Image (cartoon, rainbow, N blue to C red; front, side, top):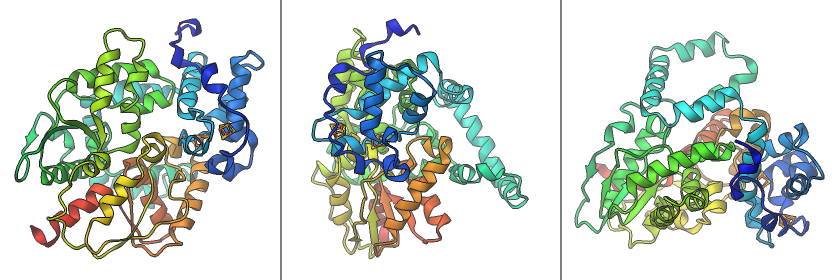
Length: 427
Ligand code: SF4
Ligand code: SF4
């Protein structure tokens, strides 16, 4: 795309950049600044570099790409900033501008264009990976040392495939248990249909227990978050239009998402499509209906009567895009605390990124592992055998942390904890 044709939100806007008063109050909230100690890898430094490019004082060069590329887009700085700098919007816009001249790597473009949005291709890839695991080839490759040293962390982070894939539930409707109060649509995600299929099943069960008829719309697709974060906003827009067509104005009380990262992008479809005359209004209606599963349940008089005792000690890790992106912090804690016998012990810095950040842990594995090291040291400060969170990517990173540091924690999504409580005693 020619740079002159960029939508207004596809490059950083002066009205957003001008809000920064260079106070530095965001520095301590930034995981990359905390780990690397470099001003150019801080929110203030990155905003400064964006201003330089926007005013023509600097070009989009390797240094700019490197410092903006190292940003996790965790938006911790947005919460810390007293001036209301919309950092999440700025970093996505800056990456879209960078992508005009420097497209993301070839493999990433292929995956984001042809793998994640294609149910056929995802199922095929998922089945091949499932066979690779089931036939013992994965363990053999590991034990024979066939995984190159530099790729071992990234390889260990790859999620196992879960058969049956959640795609088998597409097009189905699951009735409410007891009196029906709501009719909701559930988003299955993209890779989550393969590797978090049981989490999606648990989400359906918990919603059913809470008076929901749960519809899994057949024509839904990947939310487009990874594409938008990589600067591939037109690919994100195409997916947004498809999801809007699949679910908006269909009489749902809510459209539910169980992934903090996806939910944040889904709630920004109105910004993504604000220049599309056919979809701008529909996108606003879609966003008004979109709810994170924690947010939705906590906004209802959720079913506490069927929660059975779960005598466990647990700590909660905020998903960045749930806490900083969607500003949802209380809801998951309220749900967890409503489980009889469950003890929620807060760790220090629970709202600091764990280093997962989409594909950051694969693309910038070294920095991601440094951030995970700090996270696991905070996890170990509290008395807990479980870590709960609300985003599949964080679950993978924390599971890897627990394995790498031998802490023995089990990592669960909040709805999985609720599901265990509802199902305790085999009822
Ligand atoms: S982004 Fe906000 S907190 Fe950070 S330097 Fe600018 S005004 Fe201060
Ligand atoms: S989004 Fe996260 S990593 Fe990026 S500048 Fe803000 S706090 Fe730092």
